[in-house]
Length: 384
Image 1 (cartoon, rainbow, N blue to C red):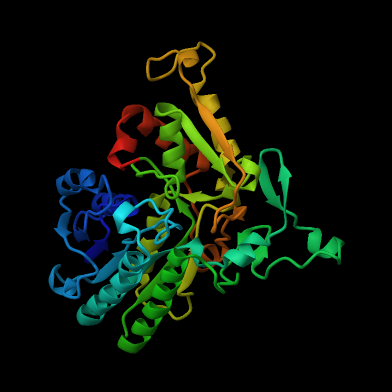
Image 2: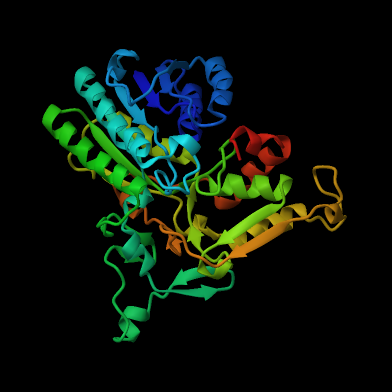
């Protein structure tokens, strides 16, 4: 089996590559990356030790298909993954203009599709929850419970003066039936357009295609930014930098997301590769940890307090807790694409593929925290 991973030196790509190398040492595994993301070259040595060939190649190059070998399957993990990509708030600096964001996230997809067409390679697209409508997400009726937003599930049935809940929303979360009507974000629109193009190419040229819409991804080794990789960013900065900002929704940190570890994503991808093509299974599935892996920023901060503000006054870094100054700044302004509650319903993937996430939120947070303690330089690697 020949497998190409695009964006192989990013967090998701490198995580998947390490799992595949461990579980399928007989596979011919290789990847490509353009190394524009700060810190991405730090993953090279690990991948090369595992026997993963890494090509310095840019998906925006029209000659991309000639720059890497032929594969049986492509796992597409390459993107500028920030919801603020292409806006002034994006975290990729000079690589964050609207045109460059489209070149990465949309035109790069075109070149991957041409590659799959040329080599008859199956394609798995790692997509995003951000393909769902910001307008509809923003109108989910929420109330504050403890330290988080919770949707008011009974609103539509108990009070006829309130608008109905958006279609595709239930107590399990946001399903694939939820609106994808713009506005989404430049990032979300580029990913949705990529999905549509991929379906057209797969239909026209007959190669297998699966699209996995993932929630927030997290785990040790992620390069955290305020707008992408929030768990890694929050834990590393809490431990080593001491300044955090809760932005939007009165600055209380009540907004909620769910998370997924890439190793759990692989459990589904492995089944999709094994099946190849199966018209009885949905091409598009939500893939996420769901309600049980959901958290708010306020809850995440409370978790950090419990882990690192030890009663003994001793901090794992060697400092006394009283010497550390954790500053939480509160900014009430809500940004363009901020949403109060995004938790995906993965029931379709569970019913169709027998897939369930196994790595719990507690395990993910502990893994990231351990990594933060061992790597005080990590935020600097990511340019933060």
